Image 1 (cartoon, rainbow, N blue to C red):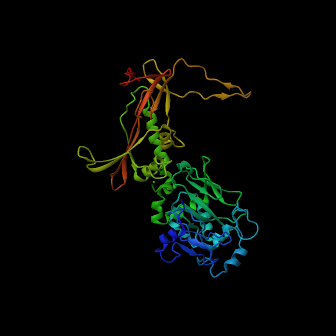
Image 2 (cartoon, one colour; image 1 turned 90 degrees about the vertical axis):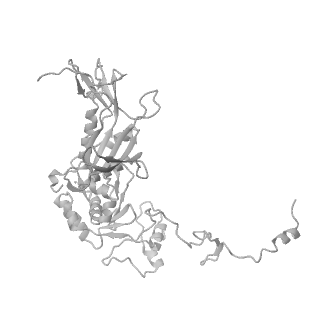
Image 3 (tube, rainbow, N blue to C red; image 1 turned 180 degrees about the vertical axis):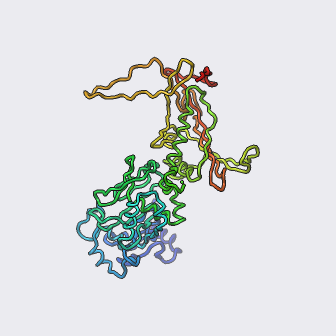
Length: 459
């Protein structure tokens, strides 16, 4: 039942005079808007009250970069005049008449890029061919302004050769921390960095006029990537922040011919894992122990965290005191349990040494076993395949990770342990790898409790 007007009036009589609390007038068109509004709700008005809050390090709509000799962006220019004379170079922009949204954001932006200095000593320290170093130096000095500017946490602007696609002489370079090691850098010149064995590389000129480096194994490094590396390595704070990328391409001794890259070191670890999965021995080997620079393990930890937004924390952290073996002292052990076989392979695969999930063997008359590589299927000229003949035996070992048996309830982990600063002054730590592997004979699981005894043959 509806209340009478008199009763409603009596209820509201003590509320006082109406106010504009929670409401504000647009200073441009006079429309009433809520105080939480970001822009005027009048569709014909383009008034913006406040910018949206952004998370620290995330992309911005527009950022001013330094282009003139003094390092100062253009000032005291009327916005309407500037908008009328501006031209948008964004490829997907469909605005042909009048200033587009990109131009408006560029004119109104109040964020400025951070110029990065370039040290000549750092440029000389990179293991690049002399002509590539010369090209980098010319790119930095031929025109005014810094070679590299930091726009956001992960995006840089780099000077480049003027071309149809880059008429302003600048392009974007992006770093992706959470991607796989093979695809962590993307450049506006459309060259994706694929990390491979660090070798000297020559140079060639791309269709867009940008100098590129093509490595002996076919992977590509654009010159803009090395421009970013030089600038990042020239600042101690940035060098620490981007240590992963710098370690992938810098020489770990002084003599470049004797330098050991991360992929070469990791390849030796992977080869040990492959060797350990031998049919002649049981499937519970002793832990594999390696000594590694802390910087190498930092890169390995990035591989462990691939696919996660944040760095993957260890499953356990244990403090212990070592009294019965050298070095003596108090140490901390970090342990990761990996229960996905594909993740294990992604961590330990290198271009020169892939991780073997399974291995094949042949049995000798004396009871020993030799590794066996099945021949690859070949296709003849007429398109028919040459099928490998059926073998009367099939002996295999396989890595036990996850649930590998029907009645298994708890997954079998591949365990990675790291004890930092075993050699504190050298920043060398101890890496331990623990895993199990199984045996198959003609497709049937063969259970082992001890190694197969073999006769000793005198040579």
